[in-house]
Length: 333
Image (cartoon, rainbow, N blue to C red):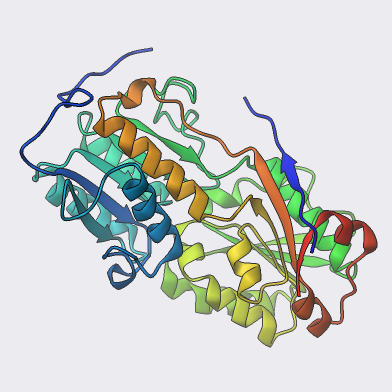
């Protein structure tokens, strides 16, 4: 088994609010609210949550000295794939004494939170397609300048183009690639289109119930490959795409290694998958609870990416992994 990481380089008003100074003792536990985009509540709570990224977040906090039931309370909430729930959930949480709110990878959720409060610190997982600077949510990635910071999921057009190229290399007969994503994500199509000899087919999915119609569209448009663009809803329901691709013999490229571990063909994404980023967010929570200001905390950007290929899935699709790709990839047998 071989594995290499890819290095991607990237490139104020100070808002204050009441926070405890580092080392200051408080009588009450600190309260962190976590709003997921689509993860079921049943897979979020407890000392060892069932959902791997959430588990990484909880364990990250524990490693930094924050333990539920001792010095920490976590208020778990989820949009359950419905962004219209965001305002009510935020209003309810802001009526409590929360010290920081963590936001899952949902653009409507992040935008709603930014409108709902300029005081409570917010830590967001910015999804693919949401540029926090261009959207006016922060002043800059280096110095956000308000109460919102977090991590970006990845660069945009460059990564989309790279994934499409890798998919074409592994499945050279591909001619029509269905890109499944939100409306904002659809704006990220490479301006020069897909790889030579291919056509990109946009398929919009905003909520979980829209996957069924999306699959009908993919078949009607005779797409012969799939690229789910990712985000909270797609990540939480990735199993539907994996099963659909397998049932119809469609090669697919993903942005997370978890999809490949679960039977997807290939992924080019964040090194280690999504869980390490949630551990980073736990570190950001720790800094805020110890007195740091989001205004001065840079929004973190990923810099290492892995190529992962599932050999069994490739064989089931009648594909042979080119030596050049196999030399660069971690191949799951």
